[in-house]
Image (tube, rainbow, N blue to C red):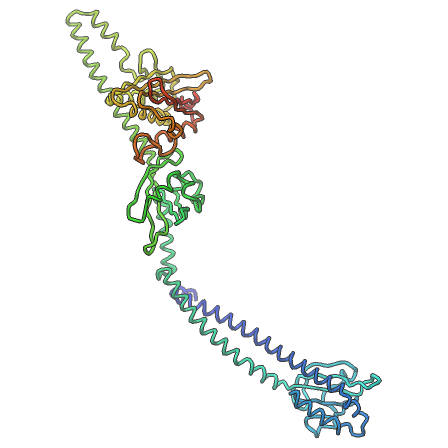
Length: 532
């Protein structure tokens, strides 16, 4: 049986299922209606019989006829007249012994009734089905009381069961026709509904739908890129595992139903810029401290836009790798330059020795004594943290390329394990300062400790600075004074988030050099690279 059902098409299964439901409802309603109709016919017949029997039993002419020598001569015509006018099968009047005074068959008058008259003769009314001389009938028996209250006889009024069945079948025929018509309409409607449902699901069968769903789920949650589907109101309707991870959510279900603006600050603008054409704009965004590349594309069904699909790619690792590569290249160029300087110095020293100018050679050696150590940027002040020293040396090499003077003065900070947060903070702030200073400008980096045990990083430049009205916006995501390029305005936001996570502070104020001065205060243990 299961195999037969599986072999049927979805349309056939839907039609058969709905036909079964229609038939079940029609049969149930029809049976209930027939039972109610039969009961109503019996109740109506019973009320009519009771009214006829009581009216005959209380009729003065009938009561007075009991004292006549021949009661049947008076009672029989009256009983037959009432029987014909009330549409009952019989009206039988008897004495207190059950001897008939009236009957549809006149030959039965004077005989004892064929059924038990004891109930009515005892003063009570009887209602029920009995079989008499005319056949099985639904009957009522009431007593006939004398003036003094004694029972003189009974009146029995009945309707044949065959007549009741005829009335029932006559009324039910039209109802059965109506049920049949309703069944036909239901079957036709079921066929139409099955056709509409199949069209709505593009003619796919259940196995095909299940296969598509399984493929969709495997593809959606298996790809590395994050994916968000937004409805026409901008709320998230779909989120895969990668998107939940990139957005810092515990599970994809946490994003469902939430506005896009709650997940990423600038996502609403990106969706609005996607438009209705085939262009897919992309933009850099920050999710916490992650750098994401977001791309939006409109989704249309039958030429109507129903939502937007947003793909998210994590560029954090790529940015770190590019930053490390740029630092390594700058450091290599700086070392190469130092190699040339030392080669020239060695040639100079060799020439002075050959000339016998030993004092001059000694002075050259003294001047070049501190030139190449990574752990000491300047002779008087040193930075012992190897990673911080490396990034500062790399930025100094880049400053020489840009024609900017970079001065570094640092306290003797303790050395610690590599800390990527320091690279992010120092690298972004110095890059901004170098861009602001421009060729021929000056940038100063100071590393010190205050009385509260905090390590203070100060980066100043002699550039144009930040206007007063924009100083409160420099850490806002997407804000930049350099250009309207939407790929800018993320570095300072990232720095501010890293500093906040590390329990420090960052402030912007005018610099003594004339430009901007950023002051970062971090706990010593964090700056030294303590474990998070």
